[in-house]
Image 1 (cartoon, rainbow, N blue to C red):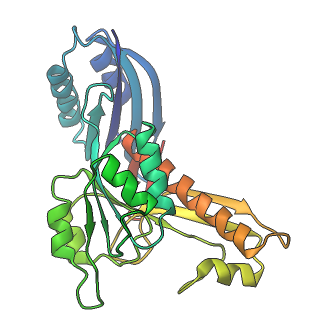
Image 2 (image 1 turned 30 degrees about the vertical axis):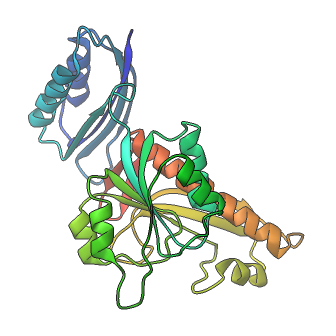
Length: 288
């Protein structure tokens, strides 16, 4: 009957934080399984992620929340989040995508298999899809709303998107080929996770895979990051790379690149939902 709890913590560094954390859990009969701590050499900031098991009859969820809130107050925490995956609601997300299906369909498939602890509230796209498209058939079968909002350079449909994503916990851009304005990001006010093709070296503009293939690169990559007002420059959550060679065709090159994007985005979402990601300095992250 024991449950797993996860606690993510960021506060000014001080003596006795781990001791107080241990006391908080042990005093309710809980048992710590792991504590991962990071304190930078050049800044007095304490980061920690803890996993513990406890008996919900001895430590009801409301009491657990109150105890960790008290711990947060004791150390003036910038962030203190506790989650019990087996009983807490799954993260409610919206997914935005453009023409390419690979990242979108991979997320839908992982969601269907229960490999991502999320509920997909809706899918929004600036490209229409035929009713017999594999994505559309999947969405209809699972009763996930699909919203087609065509965009122009003068109208990104941001107000309509804000209305559609209201109430979500975070948003995923699964190859959504539009730049979100600073006004949009401020209005939403929550995290948005993006996937970037991240080919090394970086190729901008159209057909980045073809550009990299023609340049004869030896490493390709993908980067998942938080969205900020500056294009493709937000704090990095996950990166993956793979070697390519002269033996690759353009087709195999693109397949490898798309597979990296799918894996990298899914891993970033999984880490975020498992409370493994914390902001670090201005443009960095701590990923436990």
